[in-house]
Structure formats: structure tokens, C-alpha cells
Image (cartoon, rainbow, N blue to C red; front, side):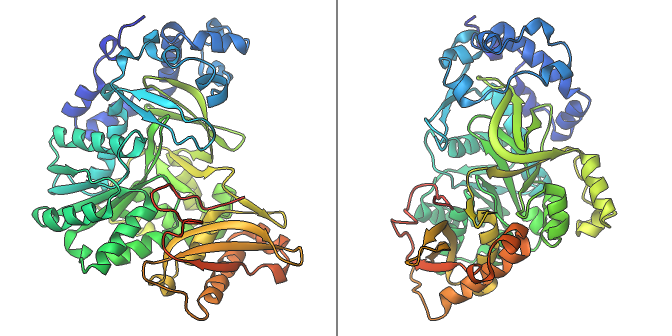
Length: 501
């Protein structure tokens, strides 16, 4: 029972390092992901001490699970009924941490922080997602690349996971140098000034608003980002295509579908999917077609849209939320990750596009030389509880973001805000938005009114509930302007929350 998992199965990391990306994905394309799930289920029943009693608590006899249809009726795991109900070692293969060589800690946004052991062996599944971005989007196999990790370093999953996977790419032969300043803006800028000139391109990897802060700080200090041939990798937050365009203008980007990519990742499951030039092109088209986006996603807001490999991470949908299965030191079988979202096959999404007049890559402004990966899509809105209710309308941070990301506001605002519902002296509900100013910028006459008008315009355009439920005299939000780093709304050094109940 104490045999490490990577001693019992072929070393996937070694296979990743010696196998070209095209070959890896071709191997997966020839594999039945549903049979993979059944094999993982059988191993968990046999080798994970917690899993058999978990099934017993739900009245499931493992011997009755013989097909994918059987698998789909297994109970959903979550943090309360599984992760917090069984000891950590009991949730690991072999009932021991011996097969793991690193640890991450979840943010604890839904309760008590959770420890997630993993091994380099299991990191191969995630490294493939990084390789897709660096190869398919950035052509890093052909260009010398400086990768600057701007996520916080420590037990949080982002920084160390990203660093490790970038090292794997360098070990695989990519001409890649990895720098790890973490979330220290002065150190990031020092590294870029000293080293970027030695490379054909520079990649900043980090949390979207922080990366934008770094770019703005560099511009304020006279750094010409366009000379760095800058590429960006994001994770941890949904952002609008207007935001991507705004950041691209500041970095000199000329190919938005190839100059940035967002990863969909969690501490529990690792990187689950990645934006591709195709998914970005589709999303940018949808950003201009709000009715088509509502038809596809069922929401007025635009989710993150990524492609994923069902042989590594398998998605199901339960009541509009995502359910994940995948192998790790703590294997996940029908794990409820509590993110709103959905899945579409490659063919299903293309049929939707054809039904709306998109007949090929050229209609999405993609070059004819681009060859997309035929992988399925998952879209994710984020946690269901990051909304506010105003006159019965659910208002999402993404609705507000688009109203703030106007070119006219680019020299005023950082892009961060806090959305809440307040009560005025007359006892009426008002939609209140605290907005952060750039360093050194103070409030000017009419600034708050201009922002309020823009937010109202885009709320009415994008959120049909808001347009129909909210009385016209209550549709203009109350904007308050705050200094950069205001401790009451925008404390420095912590993950920003865009809503406040």
C-alpha cells in the first residue's frame, strides 16, 4: 500500500520530455477517455483507502460500475464530503504521501484551506498545456524566450506550478530561460531591463490585473514593451476582450490571438485547459455578438473559453456547474469544483459558428497557415457566488469590467473595482462601484459621471435582466474613486475580490 504511484506506472514526465507535442496529442486522440476513467476508477477502488468507504456511504457497490453510464451515476466528490471527511494520506494512492514530492495549498475561498500533494510524475499532464501555449501561440520552440514568472511564490499553486512546468519545457529542449521574481514589480522590471534584450521574445506569466500593473509601471518608467516582443500568460480570473485589446495596445501587440493566452487552473486539479488562438478568435467574435454569446453560454457575460484534453482532465456538467475527473496524487473522480460553466465538443462549437455565418478560420481573422487542435472546449464563468443581486437582476463583475475598459479611461484607472449594493439615506438600494485610480492620478471633474455613464451603457447592452428589471432611475451606478492601494477596497498584496456583499 505504500508503493509510490510513479513506481507502479510508466513515468509520464519522462515520456513528456522525450516526445514531441504533436505525437503526445495524437496518442491521446487515439485513446478512449471514457475507458481511461473506468481504469482510474478501478485503481482508486483498489489503491486509495478513502475511496471505497466514500462509495459505501453513498450506497455504491464498486462491482456495479462497468460502463461510462455506470460511472456517470457515481456520487460527486467535494471538499466537505470527501476532502475534509477523510485524512490526507487516505486520499492518496497507496494511503501514503510517499508518491508525492511537492505540495500546494488552496486559497480557502470556500472554507478551510486544503493541502494538495502532487508529484513531478503527474505534472506532465499540466506541462502539456504550457507546451501548447508556448509552441502553438508563441512559437517558443523556434525563438529564444525569457519567461518571467509573476505569480506569488510559496505554497500557493500558481507560482511554483508555473515555474516547474516552464523548467520542464526548458529540459525538453525549448530555448527558454525562466526567471522567478514572483509578484515583486521592481524585480520584474529589473529582470526585463537587464535580460529581455538577449532574447527574441519575453513572456510575463501572472494574475491579469497584476500583469497590467507591471506593464503600466514599466510604461511610467519609460520602458518600451514593444521592443521586448512581449507575450502574456494569465490565470485566475475572467477578463474581457476589451481588456485584452487595451493591454495589447500598451505592449505593441499586433496579433491578439497569438500574443496572450489564459490558463484555466485550480489548486485541486492543476491546469485544466488553455486558451488557444482558435478559442481566443471565437471569443473575440462573440464579444461583438452578444446575442450569439447569450445563445451559446446562456448568460449575458462572456466566460473564459479554453480547449482541454479529455484524456488528462475529463469534464462533465451538473446543474450548470463543472465536474472534473483526473489523476494526481489525490485522484479526483467526479469532483465538483463549483465553477459555473459548460462543455462543447469541437464539432458542436464549429456547427454553432457555421449556423451564425462563420464558415472557416478566415472569418475569425486567423491566418490560413494556422492549424487548430481538434480538442473539445470548456467555458467557465467562475464561482457562482461572485455576483450581486440588484432589483432581482444578477450583476456580474464581467459586466462592469467592460464599462471601465474604455480607451478614454486608460490613463485614469487600474481596472480594479468593488461592486456592491448599498442603501442611501432614503432607504433606496443603489448599485455602488468603488474604482481604483492609477498611482499618482487624482479624481477630476466629471470623471465619476463619465465612468457611471459607460458602465450603465454596457450593463444595458449586455445584461438583459438589468435592462428589464431595474427601474430607469436606478440604472446609473454610484461611482466612488479611490487612491491606488486604498486599504479599504484595494489592499496591496492580497488577491482582489470584485464583489462585496
